[in-house]
Length: 520
Image (cartoon, rainbow, N blue to C red):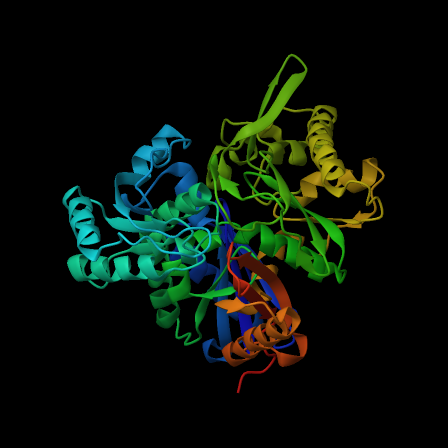
């Protein structure tokens, strides 16, 4: 039985077909399409034709995507989200999205209401929380045309009951399928970051639903009966239903897949991975075979969020980056031709000079159906441009690795050929694996199954209780299909209740492990 791993980027859609042991049987790359499923169908058809594998032999299809990220950055196809705040004493509080870019704020935030409610830091609830007040507020949000509603209560990660009761009222008034986001299911204690994440989560629900329900239908049309999974920020799997409910969890999946895929292609557990795509270059660290998480709150499009993302540096340098060259001086990026590379870059007959053009002119990159004579760069000029791009990436590597000079560097992504001078000219130890161009799809295909246990408990017998919860999380992951011999605890979060005598705390434990090699 086989797995297909797919990565849908802004420029290319990559694919890899893995056997039951996680070994690559075939791989490929095509241009990302609109709608997304057309490019995915082209890629899957290519993989099956290359190997002779039948559709019925596919046990799962796993997709990593920047679709939600791009929707935020471009401000397109987002739902207008209403915000319902539950706060004790209804305090003066910054307006929703007060520090957001104005264009994104206008695209996402429809209206907001504040009701008496929420919790104190010790878990005590507001005595003035009334469902009728919530009902009236929801009706006003709906009257103002809100297409989704996010509910955010003070200290709700310690107790989500009021948010759940509010969701029930929203469903009664707007219908069962109305998009709702509850902040206690998405973020941590910090209320502004949690509110931001909940609002974006609501706004993205149409993007993922429209993009991937049709993907599921496309697989059925190809006679593939296997389940469709998406990957989330920590490199584990989300079912399609989970991804539609929590689209915000997919925004860091692309880089995570690339980092993990690159390390596995080279068979090493500790490395710096440099992933160059058509638009950007992401640099991250793999530790113990997993992408290192950032200690800083996540941020996207200038908006601070409240969940873990890969620890990485992103540079606006990619194969499609514009190169501005005049009088022996030049600048690479930040603009990119992205998916229009084959139409707009000079090597393909277009008028825009790109980093890919420099790669061809330097002799380091061969392009089928491309015309080197259209580029207008000497080999020396092109090599200077490439070395300058590599210099910027090298400086980012130095900042990220700190004193860990022994870490090797792995080059992956569709633009990996362009940055080989990193290894040749900058004194770094490293590799570019044979399947570097599809490391992101490879990482998606190897994504793990995870399970989360989220409970409020007493920590008077701390070690005993935590041990029991860890075993519970592992058992749930095994039931979902994880290999019991390779389960690990991927994360533990403990949020204590203040000023309580029985040491109450909210504990969130995540267990993760690879899919079983053979499904029964």
